[in-house]
Image (cartoon, rainbow, N blue to C red; front, side):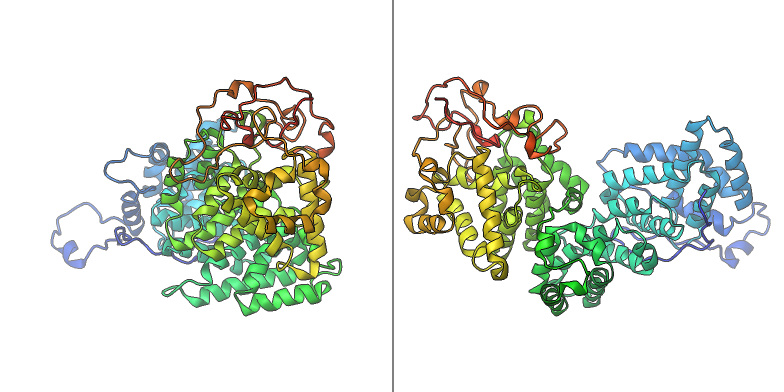
Length: 628
């Protein structure tokens, strides 16, 4: 049972505009003329509460076209609702509560408790927002629930995660009302329900329904500021979401309300100034977002200046932004900026689609998520997710599944705007800037080096573009004040990648014949120590050495590498593919000290230098050395 009961009247939350094809149904009142026209009629007129129930009965939970089958979840939930429907319609509030408590009095009867919980949840979702029925049913839940609404919240989270985008407008509005009530009662599940709802505020989406959802959630947090300030683990989640959304809203043309952007900005600045210690757990991606916004709005420009010139004003223990840049961003922040549906579809490509067959899946993904110019802001989010959240397990690394670097290369090619393309490249190399082997995962930096190596021979423009970004932007203009720190971090990245045999030598990744002598000399100037004679052996990268001697997946005509390889069964295992190396079956990353120091010897494979596409080493994070 919760600490306090909700009020009879529902707390008002901002309304989500209804679609033009779906308007709220009015509550029909009986006119005096109708009542007097048949004085002999014995049936009493329905009460206001009964009329509200009649309106609710006409509302559906999920949007459904005529050709669609009824949603299975709605059928089950509707069935549970119908079992208590007559009780809800024809009884007083006290009678409803007494009857439901009696039905759930047997503690061992979990099924009845769950069915009544589902029925009341469904009743709340389809109730008209202007009525007080939702508040009445929620109050009944607090009497009936035997687990402090845990079952109720778990059902709600599952429904939001799987089907929120299918909800009709009225149930969407009721979800916000439920969140508001959970926060009012300081329920322990209020954070998790809010978090899963925030994931449905899409980045790169400026449709009115999406904007309204974001602003409605913002108003809930602003009106419950004291509650939010007492949730140290939830503060950085909310901040990360709205800093990212501000990126989209800065250049939103009318009819976007500028006051909404101002409220988002002031909300984020307030958290950063008053709860900075909680915010810095976001790590290096917090600096990435703040630096972007500092070039767009005067408010964030001033914050950025203060953060650089007087960092101790934010926290006495905070000396420089390099502290944040040394903190890898926890995975759940990066995961939160992909909706559950989008995450499922990205993972399907990375787990199930074979190399060379990805083109139609990429086209479908573009059609659904990346069709508009503003949707390009999603690409950095997806790249950060691919680099830092999804680390393929061993069975995927050993297979012919499309590798991460191939998808990242396609995403970079999709960027039409130079600004978003450069920002996407920063997302790719962000973990390189302050890389330390004891704190960072090699899997976060692996896609970038494999993308450069895999593209250099057939699509040298991709490799040249990325190398010029490293040399000309990251080392020179990105942060001149911390140039030496960045140079050290990038050098550490290259050293680790060479040490772990992700690539055998930088000379193979940056051959002068393909990238040009001038660019190669710039690389040599900055990373001379990594271009030692031992690293400049011009051994051919063929199937026997495990090198990347394959076409790039960036071709729009082929959609990827050919998959008719003849030596997949002779794949050479990499040190990273051994048990307890970089990854286990769950995708977690053990400490690098567990890595084997020397790669195992491998049998000689036939040298197919005349057929450079027969082997597929690019999906191996570490490439084996040639046998003696």
